[in-house]
Each structure stands twice: as C-alpha cells, then as structure tokens.
Image 1 (spheres, rainbow, N blue to C red):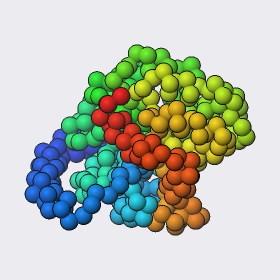
Image 2 (tube, one colour):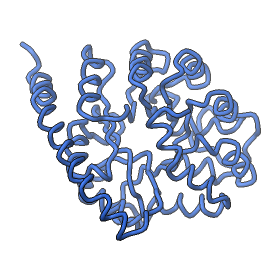
Image 3 (cartoon, rainbow, N blue to C red):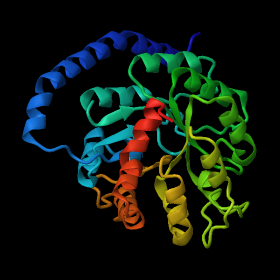
Length: 322
C-alpha cells in the first residue's frame, strides 16, 4: 500500500499552495498600503539577519523564536527545517511555511527533505512554488560525493537558490569528504550559493586539520581549505553559527582578523541558537547570537564591513548577486 504519511504530505503541498499564495498576496497589499506611513514615522532599523535558526530547538515555539529574535535585535532569519531528525532536531518544511505566513516580515523560509527518498526533487520544486527561498539544513548520513547530494545541488543551481550544508566528517557524520568533494561542485555549478556550516567546515579554517577532534583549538595554520575556496569561488559562503563557528573564530584572533577582512563579502552572521530570550533561558545562560554579535563588533571596526557580515551578504546569498 502507498505510504499514507507521504500521501498526506503531498496533499498538504497540493491543497495549500493556492491558499498560501493568496495570503501572501494579501500581505503584500497590506504592506504596500502602510509602507509610506511607517517610513515617515520611524527611521529604518539596522538590519541583522540570522542565517541559521530552527524553530523547535529544545521545544522552542515559533512565538519563542520571534521572542529570541526581538531580544537579540534580529530583524530576519533563515529558518532551516530538519525533516529527518538525524541531528536531534525534527522540523518539517510545512511548519516553516506556516510560520512564514504568520510572520512574513521576519522569517525567510528554507526547505529540506530526505534526499534518499525517490520524490525529493518533486517535493523541493513544490516548496519552491510555495515560497521557500533555499535548501537547508542539508543533513543526512550520506557522503558529499553521493549522486543524490549532487542532484539537490544541481536543482539549487537551476532554481538560483542557496543551500546550507552541514559538513561533519567521521563515522556517523554528514556530507563527509569536504576536502576532496566540495570543490568539484563549486567548479561545476556556478549559480548555486553553497553555505558551509558545522564542525568539519570550520576545522578547515586551518591547514592543519586533526582527524579526531571536531573542535580544534590553538593557533590556525595559514593556507587552510576555507581561505582558498572562499578566495576562488564567490558563490561559496561561510555560516558563522553554533559552537563550531565561534570556536573557529575565537581560537586565534590574530588570524581571524585577516580572515574576516579577506572574505567580508562571503561571511554570514548566524547563531543556530536554541535559547528563547537572548539571555540563555533553557540553554545554561548561553546565547550564541549575543556571544557572536559582541565578538564581531569587537573584531570588525569598519561599519560597512560589519553591515556586510550582518545582513548584506545574506541578501546576496539569497538573490544570487555574487
């Protein structure tokens, strides 16, 4: 018999498209009517876009997620689903779309679906029609060179989309093989924007990459893979989120200053933070967003460069202005 859960989700995609599109049209109309009045009353708020948030981290609701964004000064966020739950968080693309139509001015919806399923490309095309802006977080126990990974990257290239990829080498990891298998995709597919994230991505900030430790410390050895690839491929972006991103930046501040300056057009502020209030509620007093914001403001003195890292690069990654 057909998988009833799959059929029901297909029914969701088919039946909700018209309704969601109509809601979007009404929202755009309402925004047009009030935009002039709002602009006259209040000065524009500096943009801060978080390139990496999940709604239900530690059972956080969408309202809690918006509360986190308000507390951290985040104007918009890429909301990334994780449909398989293999990384410990399960968030369906449909949930992200519902949240987007509740908070269209705050949420930039991405989609993600199991690349091992035969209808993966069909589903991604449906999410594209429903308003999603990219794929992520791409995170299954599949090596990077797998043809199913390439098929999804190729579709992003066709759709002019970004894709956020979780790179974690080793047994039980995700998209393993970054050192050998990422560059061939960058050479072959020029339209897609690949956003690198997670432990093995950031371990490669150094030319000296340990085989076991996913959070290396100590001085960075110049000549790392990230420096070269970011210099050679303008459609590659670096997601600063989570402990892996902060660890990479903070381990050697003398190196980090130059790294941020060299790649100021390809660095994306992001948090991957699960807290609810910007102060670490439900996360041992830690807020990744505030920790990273404070660090970047200390490391980057040029306001234009900071604006790139906090928002402008996100818009380039979304729209393809590489």
